[in-house]
Length: 379
Ligand code: ATP
Ligand code: MG
Ligand code: MG
Image 1 (cartoon, helix red, strand yellow):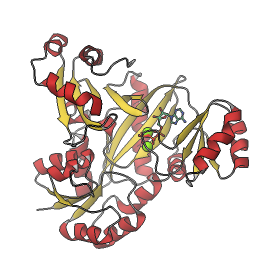
Image 2 (tube, helix red, strand yellow; image 1 turned 120 degrees about the vertical axis):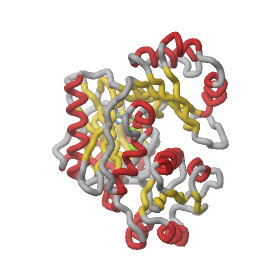
Image 3 (tube, protein in one colour; image 1 turned 90 degrees about the vertical axis):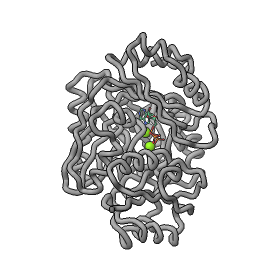
Image 4 (cartoon, helix red, strand yellow; image 1 turned 60 degrees about the vertical axis):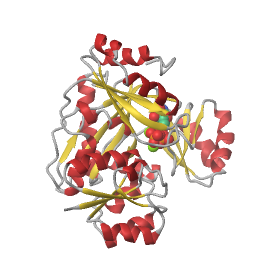
């Protein structure tokens, strides 16, 4: 039987393992944490991601290797490519690890990104701010997530300070025009080793403190925009010859224009809704894509709202789902809880999520309000 290796042992690796195990695959994960969520459901090699001996062991034990995060060390990626089979390839990582390379690749696919400038000095920063105007946002080109490594510049006189702060990290920098979006959406697209492409329905994403809070599907944007977003995502996946899943984050501007914000070459938090709401989950689809199986049907079976369970929500949501849920019954909402098995429930840490199957997404949103676990969030 085929054994699949996963670089990284977080919740994405865990959900890939759970989906793939049901399909008959075996899994090995490489992760330094003794209590990694994936290690509870897969065999684990407990070592650092840049440990070449451990990577070789992973290659020896596995027929196919994938990853659940994009910041895989380039040397380890090429070692794995030499010693095993990495259908996604290292070029996809090379592109998506670096915001400038990523933007150029998106543009090469004929898809719009926010106007941007490469920033290499205080002078290029000042010139770029006057060209792009304010507000704009300065980002480190590598390593950022959950809004880390970003500074929003609202007045031109904040430019130098923002530059000094982020330049001190030693990272390369990019300045982007701030898009005054109506909403943010994302499309998870799969491209298989055979070149087949399928997109999932777009999710409307609401962030709180730069962390994804809620995904709403169908997204509350016109159907034409949803179709356009799926087309753009497929065009990017095709153009960069992605294999496996590619999550495409987009801004919807007031004039209906779509801008791609960033890409992630892996399962995405905004795709968790697919677990119960689509005919095929994003995790099954990823396995299908990298193993060369025909891609699964991506139809939406039910409207759904996904809400993340952070450390501060964990106890409350477990208590709640352990009881008869009168409000859910009343609203016609079916809550499906997914817990990742992380030991420490720190504030702001993603511990799980709930998929709320509903007749209409407004009912799912109402359920979130009524639980009182997610306070004062304006959805
Ligand atoms: P993630 O956790 O999604 O990987 P990240 O740290 O890589 O986040 P981005 O996705 O680039 O960061 O930005 C985080 C959020 O900041 C976006 O979802 C969006 O709300 C806002 N943002 C980023 N860039 C822009 C922009 N150019 N215009 C408007 N809003 C932006
Ligand atoms: Mg990102
Ligand atoms: Mg993002």
